[in-house]
Image 1 (cartoon, rainbow, N blue to C red):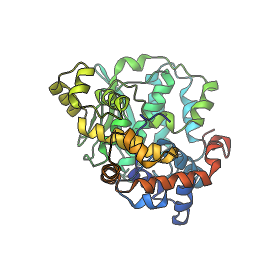
Image 2: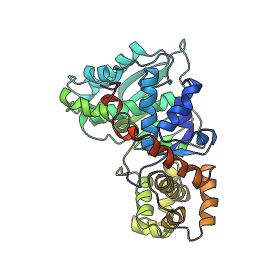
Image 3: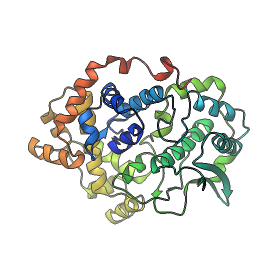
Image 4: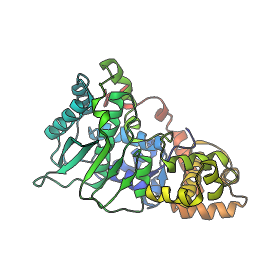
Length: 354
């Protein structure tokens, strides 16, 4: 796994587990390589692989491809039939209209409306006043699905002008920068994606023969954003990671990216983050992944992310995650007990995403 992969907050994991049978939670967490003790730690994190494994296990357990998120389960095959209904659309604009029609048939919480607004395309979630209220996680995931499927259809990652949400910023809101390839705004009057309207005219380039691989890789291909995206915060993240164990200053990163320090900080603030936050996130995420995926000594990991003193690393790690490095090393032992995690995906076993 690339050291640049972001980790996932435990609040998202618990959002998926909320409707799971309590007796199943520990079993599914262990099979995903997640220490059960971490589920109760508010600041805990998991790797993208652990999250995706848990997602697939829950989808099979609950027969729900958005496990436990909506009032009605999205039964096995929902994503497949959604994509099949889009593949013969002549262009993305038509496909997005069909996307909204499809979910109007299967969801009670909201409608998904796509439209042109001058030079921009807008995909908006419109709540159903007579239906159940969708959680913030449900709205985030649906916008991710819209963006992921749209990008897959045109074989091009669609950059966003903005992702807007009608709920307040939370402590974990910074994680949305690792999910949406564009600025993220909160406390707006609606929840929507905005991108260049020119993308609506692109032809649908995928064919039915391409669908199997996309479904096999669900949910990674539509949830997570590659750090090759050209947001400034992503470029800063890459700079910091490439220079470790030497921890670069903001001045050094600004010089490498050809910004003044003031401009860099202003750009990061415009994207909803800061240099210090990114520096902490990079070191935290690399540490978590090394603890879970390697047998490297904790002192060695501490040095590689810029700590000469293991005690200082332990203190920083507890500040970042609410837990000790040893609690995450425990997940390494859990991983070894469940080798079937690495054998196949749902599509190779019960076929949830086929």
